[in-house]
Length: 358
Image (tube, rainbow, N blue to C red; front, side, top):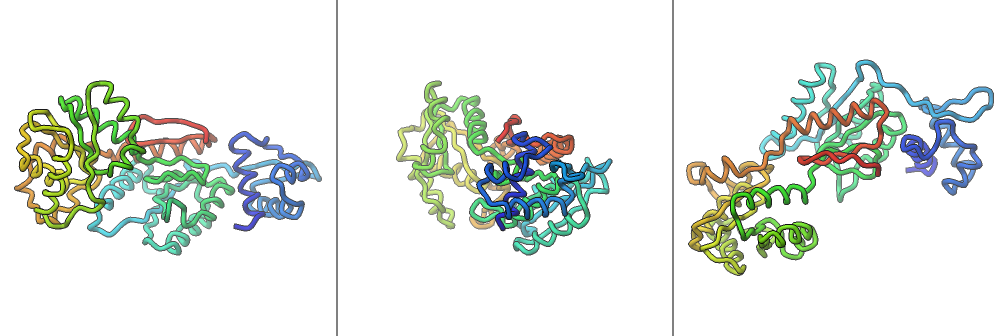
């Protein structure tokens, strides 16, 4: 991004955060604030004036004059939806359907493929249509937005944005996303409530477990519950028997025995069934298994698992639901807050909302 565009973005962002007054300081003060020369400040203001974001009269100081949303606001969704057989697709579409039901037929939905240019074209169309707000399932690579410059232009033009399923710290906009620590904590609590005194996480390697879930270690070890990470390979074998043996070996290496009530956390539905088989192989009599529920049915075809084989107790009662309707309504709540002028909101799902200024 050109330097003057970065300065324009920073000016708008600082006003929205209350760090600059709407009646903007002199160019000299802004030069010192952002440590840039007069030419960059001048180009930034030319850009902001062309966008209708700032104005001045008779040589007076510039004033930030954001575009006011229409009544009702014009809203859109840009979504990079996976292929039809992907486990995310149904979930994403449930969120979009709920937004359509809540907002009405005026909601504009743009589906894009997983190419940067496809999303770029959709975002540019939204700018041309003068939308007031956009719900975005953004394309990212290495935790970075592929079309960061366009999302920054949304900020400058007062196009409110709510990001779905992604935490996007580069943009001053709320993100409705999952907090993995909170999710892990919820699964631990569920197993603990079912009387499990030894809990094994099958979804993380030991070194990541210690770093990511230290709080869970402290909280539950003090309460008489031991939590372990099964030292499994990053990718289990795609052969059912070998995968069961891998899980069984990892469980056997831990200081647990068959008389204790064991709780296991699996990262996908197929692993729930494999963990069930491994527990039977080791002679465990009392155990519970939970999964986060996102990867619904993932891996059943890989291992040749048929629905009739699985233990329905684990799949009917142990899943933590991701609540697509709640996510859509939380995103709509965030959008309405921004349309009212509140630019300091943050949201983490599926647990309690957390409102913070960055």
